[in-house]
Length: 217
Ligand code: BG6
Ligand code: MG
Image (tube, helix red, strand yellow):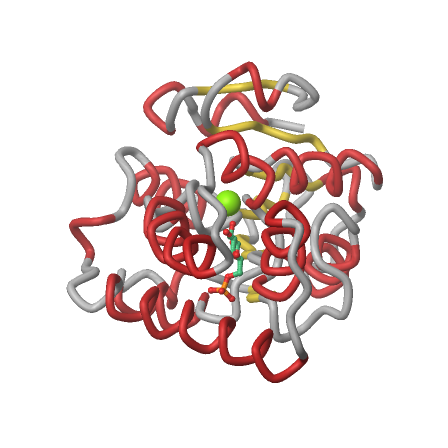
């Protein structure tokens, strides 16, 4: 699937393709409040890229609480219901600036395009954004047993794209995701603030700063 000239692009979803990170934060706030904990933007940074279950484990720990397995499952379900509610009006207009154009140009040049998102809602979101057809490979939270910062999902995305990890370029907004991709020698582009993403090969504010020519092998 890989071309001689160009790398495979592996996109994260939440916070890279669309601003759903803000919805996760919103939905977790109520969970944290139930546990008598106020979740901060810094806490949210540590939740980015982390699976739903691992995120709740962190929040319970920060709150210094213990919850029964039944309550834990109920909190997960309620958080996801709130999150899905916030997604209800998501559409093509919610694709972050420059992303769609970059993908179209990459497709035209035959770059394989892959997704690795920790989200179990990834396919639903890509369908709402009307870009699911642009992906050659889709790896999401349903396909892995270990969440970012473990590299399992990136390895799977590289394998399915028939590309060696060193020829993959990863777009990520989370420290956990950059850590995971760095661990197996992928090139990493952090999307967001340099403070939390300085371990990436390169950091950009958004896709307007990124051109396909930056990634010629
Ligand atoms: C990641 C987000 O993409 O997916 C996390 O960065 C989120 O914030 C995780 O918790 C799991 O998402 P979902 O949709 O399966 O709850
Ligand atoms: Mg993300």
